[in-house]
Length: 207
Ligand code: C5P
Image (cartoon, rainbow, N blue to C red; front, side, top):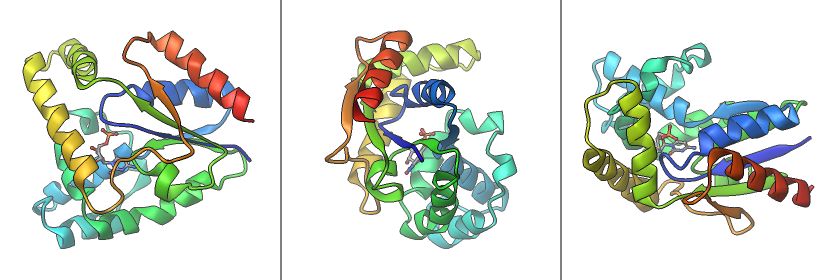
């Protein structure tokens, strides 16, 4: 059973890459960021504050996987709220079983997030740590947001990204860090196709 763990900071391109890798090897795919985004959304809908651990845990315990595909989850602001709920250890604990069960399905899986190689699937078949400079990630996210006609400047996106990096790396519960045995894939100067090819080469070589 093949499990490919993909971690990296916000807007590193890991989602696009993971989807293509999953398709290439015919594996199921889970974007774990959508779990934290959905918890943030549900906390606010229930009238709670994402900073309140008990409110966020209550949302995490009731989370419905059918609602992970909501396009509203990609909105600017939801990522920020997601990184707030994601810093609560009990929220992470409430989401652990779902992620491990997903990884354990017989067909194998590609799972992306921040702590997949370190906490969720420490025994993954292959681990990738996908990164790019903050400026390049801001540029990509800005183009994405502009396509969706969201009014925002590239500098605002860069500030969002730096803030989220800081929170994801600096938290005590499962901080964003490259697993020792993860392959580093810096996509700063790579097209989507080139990043995909580099990922496939790394994975094939590790199998
Ligand atoms: O990857 P994405 O930007 O959708 O993730 C949103 C937020 O969820 C991240 O900034 C991070 O704080 C949190 N997250 C996490 N662990 C994961 C996936 C996402 O803490 N495995």
